Length: 177
Length: 177
Image 1: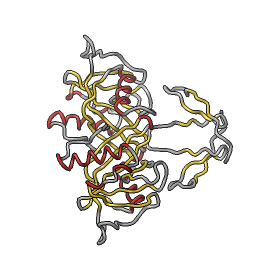
Image 2: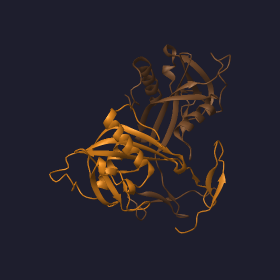
Image 3: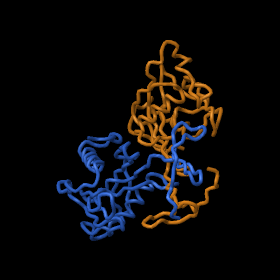
Image 4: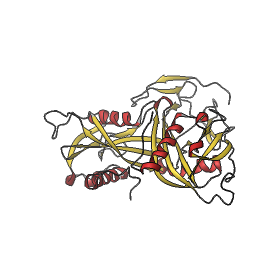
């Protein structure tokens, strides 16, 4: 279990791109861009954010989002991430945005969402805090932790959600900034 | 290079899902859903289709589409696939549809597109035929090879493109039928 991996860079037969092939066992490590699914979650005029308990960007604020898993629809993945990170159940609305971050080989699919049935003490307590979060909080739009946002795309999606709230929905946004 | 791979199914530390871990070298084979990028390409009132030269579904008709590569934007990937399969240069329009095929762990991003500068003999000859295609052809919408379409999602996207042509664009479609 601890033998270090040694890969050669080869173009396998019938392929058009070079891949990493393990010298030890011949395994071809096909790497593909990864899909991040997430949501901008509204509740009572506020927006739900999570303070990250894990690297990268531990301690910074983000929305519920993460990697899509095998055999999962993107919509189910976005809901799962909200359950895991904020113990929140969502009703998804329109697809807010599709961002691509080619440097990281990432494509992000971000939905608009509403919190379902957060119970009596919803204003601040919400459901609780998932293992990957230090805090989960509902922010007023004019009190967002703008200086402690984890990733550029989180700025983009908050801006795009505001634009939809003001002007209505007209299809998903692409990269901003 | 020919040692057969032997994987154990384990949940690595700090992970929430089981992964395949190589018994020989400890490599964790993180598998993620794959992103297919493609386009419905219009030209002079017709639609471009490719007859597949490769499995699966060799001999059946599809649109230019394939897996997004690392460090590639989805838009660039959709254009690359059209170059590879139909030697065609595209101008992309709106995002036509996002389909998910969880059984195959696939998410498909499909654009509307127009053929750029196909030259004088554009009607039938187009640019040529890529290695992955047996034929490339422009079809009238009422003469599509409906009984020889390679994949269900190709039926969906042709139907969705027709709907946009008739009613205008109003955001990307999701899964059909």
